[in-house]
Length: 215
Image (cartoon, rainbow, N blue to C red; front, side, top):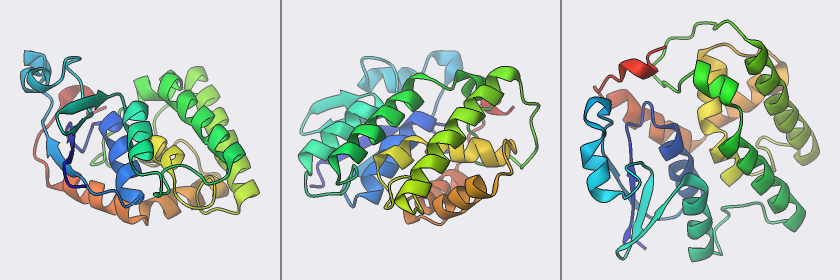
């Protein structure tokens, strides 16, 4: 269904764009993407021209627009019920959605201190109390889920909940937030996934610099 278009921000920095892009790509959903780079000084005028919220990601389907990462993922899952967007088991799906909402609404300690930047050289960041609480909770989710499923992803096969944590993979690695062996194994599996490889390859070719995210 090639009439699906996902409008995203800079692939190097746009964590919210990365989430639905990876979820759809990993599920084998056919779509095109369009990158509109951030322009903070001008309030993202090109983005506001297509998005009533002035934000990305934005999914466009036959003129119908859906925004917010989780809403886009759910729309794609309903549009393609035969694709493995979410885990197959009902209880696993419920947990996956709960963890995804936790990611969407929480973990501000890490998000504020460690902007996603796929080009950032690996360098340890000072860990505040808020960051430590986030790291501990995220690792609890990851380790418990993978121990139960057998991995390599949270519910065995890659699904939308893994995609929701994709920017955190970059943060954990780039800012050296953990050296736990189970965390490092999950990061390694993630970085070998074709959807991650495709997104980060595009990001590497970008030349835009966003000073606010060059922490």
